[in-house]
Amino acid sequence: MRIIGIDPGYGRTGYGVIQLDGSRIRSLEFGLIETQPGLRMEQRLLQIYDALLTIIERRKPDALALEELFFSRNVTTAIGVSQARGVVLLAAAQMGLPVSEYKPVQIKQAITGYGKADKQQMQEMVRLFLGLQDVPKPDDVADALAVAITHAHTAPLTNRIRQAEGR
Image (tube, rainbow, N blue to C red; front, side, top):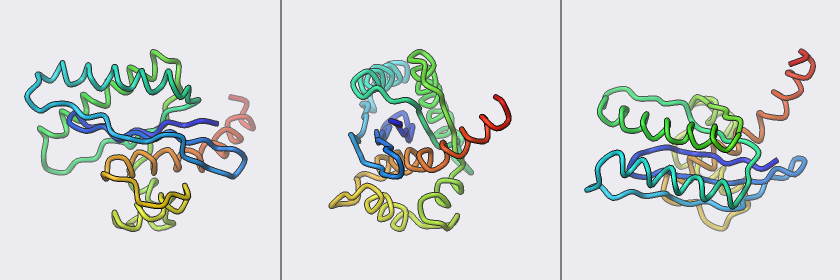
């Protein structure tokens, strides 16, 4: 199974594509989609959309995973991130990719075994899971890989449950 994980943002969208072969997970590609701050929002969203379609067409993932939106104070930022998430969801739907969303605590639990892990713990575990020499940078990229790894751990069980339930 090939999974693309996305950490959406309108300025920086992190992505990571991983391959799951049995219990082995390896990184195929990861990086950052960046937009210029001076552009109008619709142009920034178009850049994200176009770049994401290119990555999906190149890597041909079987599924897309992203973190559920969480915000506490900055509503303006949350609106922009929501718009970027909408573009990601549109690209996934257009490319026929099933989408799974995970809460931050689910991702931390899947990656470190502790739902309140800090950024450094998360990044180091992502590095270890993927056998990378260095922690993926910036944080958006490490977060995207973390959500992809979470899906790799979760999807097989979810699929078995659905099959058992006849869905």
